[in-house]
Length: 195
Length: 204
Image (spheres, rainbow over the protein chains, first blue to last red):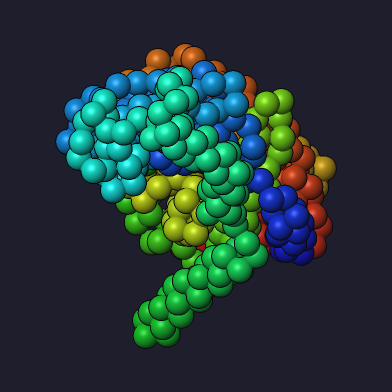
């Protein structure tokens, strides 16, 4: 029993000091310009390389597919203003599923206008004489800059969501102690009544 | 080791849940009252053990310690490991709620099997012999668990051999670590508290 307690303490201290956790799929996706950008990987920081990501609508219709790159990221261009569900099978019982709600879709789609008729956020080499086109191009550049600035932040938020802190570990142990205490109590009461 | 929601087909989930409920029932029935605290400690150990990750090559695996649970608890490993899995799913998102039955079965059934196979070796013989039996039990429990995960994935449409191989080979280091840990735990328990491995199945 002392050994078990020792293992428990060891496990606790190791689990505490290691920020990355074993073998859990971490995934996130967000609108980025006209496209949805996403990232899939394992919780120990390993990206899911060259994994097929299938895209489904809420009703199960297949909207398309993409492959993740070497760094586990993918870019998907949505065509319809519906909720997108990204599904990737990483094998051995690991499945990543990301939901992007219709309201979170790129602005050009969320407005309900087809993407080609929407004002192009992607910078086309527009005639520089046209001041309106200049503004659109500038806007695209600024949007791109902001996206690049925000990207690490987004990743951090996704990683933070997966973080386990000591509180939840202790909370879990507390639940276990309580549950088994209850069980012990019930069993003991039954025995007292029987005896 | 934890299969997540949506990775398995419906019949597999249903069958796994049904079998896990049977195991839970047997475990709760056969548990002698004075063993309940031990079950709680092992449940907590299992709950925390999966947070210890062992980096292996490109990926990493975590400890399970179901062999030790099976050796000490026998059938009561089912409720102990079920509680651990439930809380892992709720707190950390390991595995999922719908596949809880399958995961319980995959981890607790090997524990019970190891309990039956290796406990006589632990009760008899010198502490050194008992430690070897314990180590064998620790490794066997992981091997059986990988086999069961492979079967569960295969039954859901993944090809059995590659799926099972992948899971099995990824867990060879875990088997080694758990063999050492379980062996050491058995050795110590035999010296300081030999009655820990008395068969709870007959006592209850």
